[in-house]
Length: 550
Ligand code: SF4
Image 1 (cartoon, helix red, strand yellow):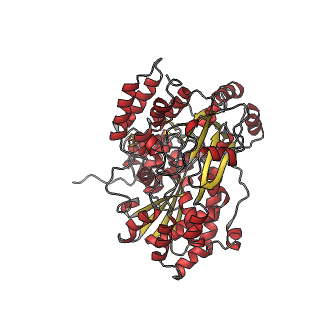
Image 2: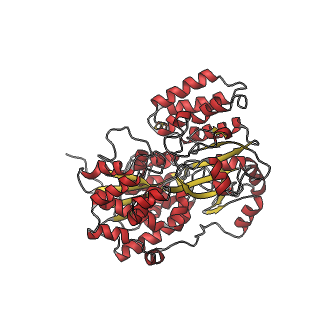
Image 3: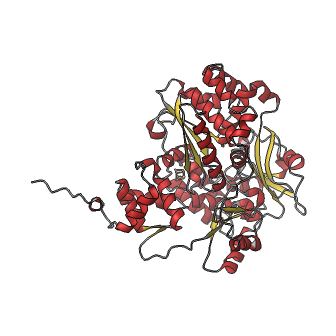
């Protein structure tokens, strides 16, 4: 006789018992909509937002509610830094966390001192948490009090924010749907929908513009779109809004001030490659952007202007590796952000196994411009794009400049020169992973293909300016520490290599040969760009700053 089936849903869950109270909490938070596996990270956010941590009871209840194993839910929750998973017997963190950025721009602006001073000043009732780059490098040192991002932070500004209860995201004035339409917004997409511009017309326009992916890889955009043209339909467009590279914050401003130009570019892309859905994967460090996108996407859908292309917004959860396109797909599916081996390539088998086009925010923003004004206008204006400039300059920020501008010109023409009391010593041309170049190479064009022969690359155009007051050893240690923390751990050359590299940098004298050997192994054998690039800053220090490094 077969065993009698239980009607009690709690009885199905293996492992930890599910408490009725926790299950009730989870059901209340999730609401009545059907449970979706790909929304697991969104559900975890709901719990984290409500309770400022995720208890073992809530994890077990969520697993039961979603009919997943507890291990599966736990492995996802524990992968992401923004979830505080608390086991039985452990003390939950305080309700309020102050996240202090310890990225390279913030470190040279005094983040360590700020962290220590805050710990002394705020006591145990508020958690002070050092975190990787929060994308506010132009106002370093930066911190977030709850969701309230504070630039040029010190103990006083943070204490004031806490005392005033200012813990929510502040929304800047931005171009909303009405304003965007009044300026001719969405006319380019309408021209695609009406057939005035065919997909082939648009592909040719993008091809002639020479637009390359501006998230870091620099792959020709038209070529990438072409890969999907003959694949089965419907495809999916995934927008990579997870700029986590230390020093990068340009997409933040596009999203916060002109979100519809990005969305229009994504709709055009979806139209060309035959996609029926757009997923925007937004880094969780931009809560103000999340609110803006949510509101504006809802307006767009209410007006039906997105046609038959569904719009989805997803929150990251504090994992740099999810900026890697296949890790991003995994995360969008509600899993740990582990980069996939390729093939299959996303164009053939991407999100949910469907052909997927993945483009960065700025790339799609430029697509709108190009379709609107033509490839020639884009070329004639110098293929302008956004550089994130931070560090020792008078006026850091997002700078619109012609592609290929040099760092010397960026500093002089766009940043008001070096900060008072600082002499230009060197620069990161492409964030933490793009290597470090000396000031003597400040005339090189910041462009894809121009820095590679020096072991560097422009990547996402995150330019961090260093001065004579920034010891190169400290800079390198900060960057390697970042990679060590952010490695997903999936492959040994990266996981063990980052750890070993960090250890070797602590030695009184660097063993150059051993460092180079290890760097070679990491470059050759790591699965994704994180491990392949993690040693770049060290190699740059050995190549260009010998005598200044150990
Ligand atoms: Fe993960 Fe590093 Fe391997 Fe990339 S290289 S898959 S981040 S362990």
